[in-house]
Image 1: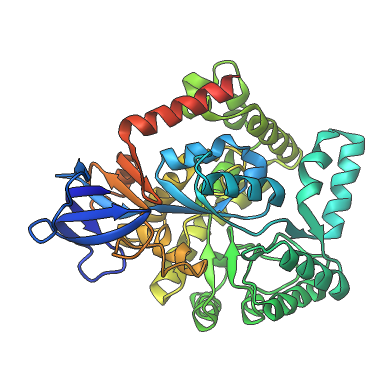
Image 2: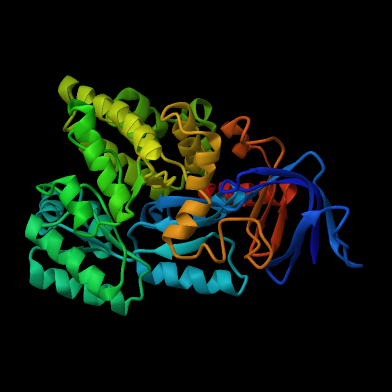
Length: 441
């Protein structure tokens, strides 16, 4: 048993968000009791953690990661940053299942994974990948095609959903589709199968129609930028999310990274001097760097002042979208798009929280909700995860300072408890060291 003593417990959903001087008892992976230190009896033999002056938040989620880009080193890196659960937004289902088995039996450290399995894609895009691989980098097809399924019409949409049901995925991810009709057919088939659908904004499909038709979650910035529309028109679209119980995962972190793609700031990460420029570089594996370089090279063919201006406009609009959507009651999820260009696993989630507060102007409490209760609720796991309460799985992050005072304090991690396993600061540093060593070799 573990007894965390003297800690201030934060619940982003509670009217009184912080309750001081609490004791948390953890046994067999579950929170057994939470209450005032004066009222909780600590059993003999329990491992005591003095958390006086510390703050306990629920284990964090990154609601948008891609392990097929990061490779396995991301698993430890995420836990070392307090990310105890993730939504994998399309990837290699076989490796994910193998990791899940190993994590269940304790032979691998990594976050709980809620997975979409292979993502659904437009056949036209898949054809372009094949063509670009033939004429340019042959690695592109090997990196992209194995975890994507083309959906070009209602027949392929039905077959795709049937295959995902067989794979026992947790939800569906659509990056694009061959046509609006194929997209709508996929939504119908997913609804029939009882699967939620997270999707990019699909070409040719008005956002309000997508949400009305069953898109459960929107990923990334909205294009063309909503700022070009009147406030009344914008609000009418946002209210569609509220009416349909849809979610928004803005991935501000990757939007900022996209601004750099193709220019000198992005390419500097591949230089011999990269570690001096960005200390996180020591955690980037060769597999991840190869993907980043391919992304940067691809975007370099589509650069120029017009594109740069469009990206900056879209980002500015996106922060406004997040703020107004939250005001109207839309549920926001914190997702970094870890594995995409210049988004480091673990680090990216804390950057997303910072951007949600400092640029989208959410409250720290709302930002924490988007990385704890929100994703647990999306995953239909809020009865087990998302808050620090008796009977729930023991996923806890202990912080040296109050994140409600400054959201950047989520980075000041004192210890992590994942499914009842305690990682001290020394343990977390050891995980980081293992990742650095694995990356070097």
